[in-house]
Structure formats: C-alpha cells, structure tokens
Length: 192
Image (cartoon, rainbow, N blue to C red; front, side):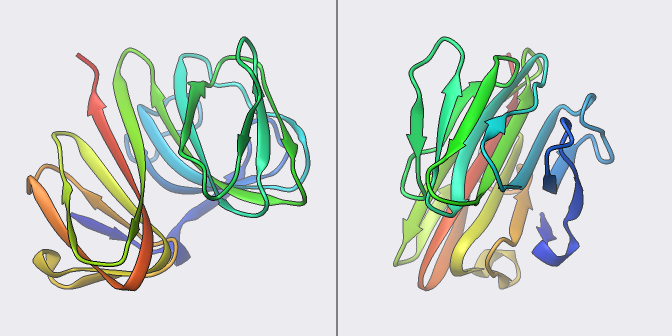
C-alpha cells in the first residue's frame, strides 16, 4: 500500500505538446509515454483540439473540474462529458478530438496497454463508510473531493487529488468519508 500525495505528482508535457499532464502513477516505475503497461494521470485542457494518439492503448477519461467537454472519437457518436458523467472508455489510438463546453477542464486519464493490461474506473459519491473491493492487480483510489480515511491502513487520510495505491493486500478496504467525499476507484489487472 502506498500513499501518493498530490503535491508529489510529476508534471510533464503532453505527447502532442499541446499542454501538460500530471502523472499520478505509472507501471513500470519510471516508464515513459511509449513504454508503460499502465498510466494514471490528470490533464488540464485549455482549448479544443486533437487528443494525443497512443498506439495499442485503451483509455478511460473522467471530468474532474470545469463545465465539461465533448469527445469525438472516430467511429462513435460524440460523447458529452461533465463532472457528473460516468467515466468514458475508448481506444487511445483512434483519432479523437475534444471541444470544450465552456472554458478549461481538468480530466482524469487511465490508460492500459492493450493485450497486456485491463482497467476499470468507478466514480463513488460517499456520505457514509463503505467497503471498496480490492481485486488482484493494482487498485488506485483517488480522492476527488472532500476527505476520506482508511482506518485499516494505519488511519491514512486522503485530501483532494491524493491517491492510495493498493496491491492485493486485502480483499476489501474500508473507507470513511469526512461528511462526504467523491472518489475514483481505478482497478488494473493483467489481461488473460
């Protein structure tokens, strides 16, 4: 189990040079944009335009801040996304462009190398303690809003944008929100 504080995340340029991304975690450690097995990051999108292409990668995007975005992925109907939307999954190697709805946004990006890794992203709004299922592989719990405590993990507390990276140490991890909290649960596993 590893606590990742928002103040320690690495900021780096987008693959297409159009902005910056904040890397939360990557595997293997230190992997670059072309050789990761999986990567979780946040990006500030300041203007409409094309997304970077990642060959052989599957991607899930969620809006964290701002009015929202309309994603246009080749072969699919445009997807309007706001902070209330479910996470949206698409192939990262399909031509994709985005149109901002009303000003900049910050998004959460989860990417896994197709054929090697699989992922899922779940958005949880909590107002009472719950158990989060931990499956084989890696589970990342990002606190989007509010605060959350993990009593079984030595009273670890997450504030906004902090992340808890969990291996397979437990099957269920209890989380207690401070009044209320919004969490994103990212589960990553080896593909069969």
